[in-house]
Every structure is written in structure tokens, then in C-alpha cells.
Length: 406
Image (cartoon, rainbow, N blue to C red; front, side, top):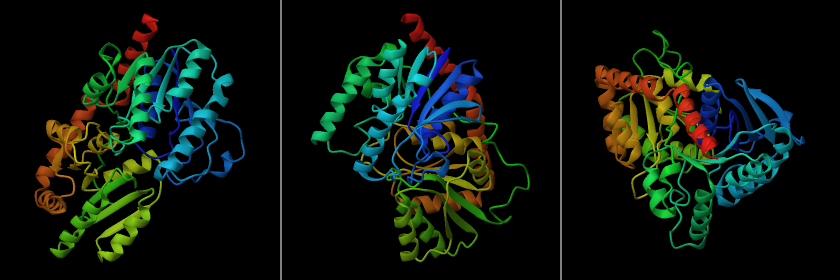
């Protein structure tokens, strides 16, 4: 089976969408499929397009054994709605440049951005006479933070209704998405296959003994790794760092690594709060380097922004955190917190509650046996359920079913 994946974001781009597309592509290949990814020039999150891609109509390359056709997008930072729309629409158009070079196609899978990637995927599907599937990393417009009375919200809902109707298979990342899709957009239960996030456990794995590059033996390092996007509440982490600092816990250190639109705000708040126990590493790392950084931490934090309602999605970051065998400090309600509690792999804190976050950090520091057990539980879980080979097998089954029914 030959699958074409339409994904604006793909490594080395950061973010959950990029990770999801890569893991599915790799998982399908491990299960005997032929995969071609149509992606944008690397640009996320800051709009820094590497020199080798500039002024070229297409770039053909291989990323970890995956055939990738790169198409142009403008060098625009992914921030604020207008700039994101420019990137989304640009890729929806330029991704079609790859159509003559995609070869024989059995199935097309629209990976990201949500809903919008379905437009070029549908055109690929029509030209190649192949069924088309839709990935759901996030629920649009429900998870976009828009007032449900706004015109934009209503327009996106209308688009979502059409897209869900036209997709021949729907692959949400979270089981909590299913009810919303069925209740708001028609009963699509027969074509929904929940395929959770996956992780390459050969890269994201527990550290070998003695790996202390990022910390001294007596230091407790709390790490966030990923994009500095508005989905995350870094204020909660910074205020927790202030609480720890005020308690004279000099052996606890915080590290925030990544890049994105909130970088300047994080820098400003570190100065305003006079924090000397926190390091900001403004750098995009390769997947192996991210894994090493996670390995060298003591605990990993997922500080999701409080949207006023429970989250229904599960960040792919959680699976990477679990895979390295570290306890997860999950600042969220809904699906992420339920996942952490069910797998007994971390501590759940209410979003925005920086005092409880600080207390949880100090608890893990003072109870290393508990931290170790939570980390072990997380690793055991992803080995059983969430390797990229396992999620690739689930995706292959879902795509084969739609092929058989066509």
C-alpha cells in the first residue's frame, strides 16, 4: 500500500503536528507500506527557512528513510491568526506542486493543519482516484479559543461539517474527540478509528546510569521542552520557580527549551520575577537531542493553558515524556490528566495553580523512590501500547479497511 501524507509541519519543524505526521509515516513504513510525505519547507515556529530551500519550487529529500517532497511557504513566523492563515493557505496551494511527482497512490492522509490540509488532500484524492483520510490532532473550531458566537467560529464549523462528511476515514488522536465529532457534525462512528500518539522508544528511552550532563548529582531539574506557543501557560512554571526560589531550595533548577512566539514574554518575566533558578534554552533540537535533554532531567512539566473547560486532546509530548522514564507534572484537566492518572506516570496539578506545582516538584525531589516508580510506569505503558510500530499497524488497518470498502 502506497500512502501520501499531506503535512505542512514535518521534522525538523517543532510541535505535536510535526511529531504526529513523522511517527505515523515511520510506523507505516515499519509495517510494510510505501510512504511519501508532502510537506512545507522547514519553517515552524519562527519562519526561519534554511538557505538550501530558498527560491526553489520543490525539494526532494529523505528524512529518516521517509521520502519527502518539500514545497514553498513564505518565511513568516507562526504567530497570531493572520500569519498562520497566510502559512496555511500558502501550503494548501503549493502542496499541489508535488502532485505530478507523487507517483502511484493508494490512499491520501491529511495530517496537518487540521481541516485545511484536507483541501489539497482531496485534490490529490480526486486526481489519483484514491480514498482520503483525515487526521484530527485538535478539534477546530472547538479548541481554537474563539467565541462560539463569532462569525469565524461559525464559518469554521461549517467547513468542519463538510470535511468530516467527505473524509472516508477519520483518525482522531484522542478518544475524547469522538463524541464531539459525532454529536456536532453527524454520526461518523463507522469511519472513525482512534489512533493515539506514538513515540520512537529506540530514541526516547531511559538514560543510561551516570548520565548527568545537564545536572549535577544533587540537582533536581524540571524541564519543559517544545514550542513556546499560546497553548501553554509558562507563567505557571515561572511562578512555581519563584515559590521554590523563595523557599531557598537552591538544588532545584528549571529549564525551558524550545522556540516560539512567547519567547520574549518568557524572557521579560524571568527578569521581572528576578529568577536565578531558571534557564531559557531558545533552540530547536533534533529528535535525538531532545531525547537526551529529557533523559538528563529529573521531572518533565506539561503546563497547558486554562481554557475554562477540560482538554479533550492528548499532547504527543506526553508520550515522549513517558518514554524516557521520568515523572510527568501535568498541569491540565480532562484527557491529559486522565491519561496521567490512568497510567500512574506523574502528578496532576490544576492549570494555573503554581503553588501546587511547586509543592509537587518538591515532593518528587524529596521522594526519589516515588519519582522513579512514576517514571517506570510511564515507560512500561508506552512500550505496551504506543510505539510507532504499534500505531503504524493501527493506521495501516484503518487505511486498508477504507480501501476494501471503496
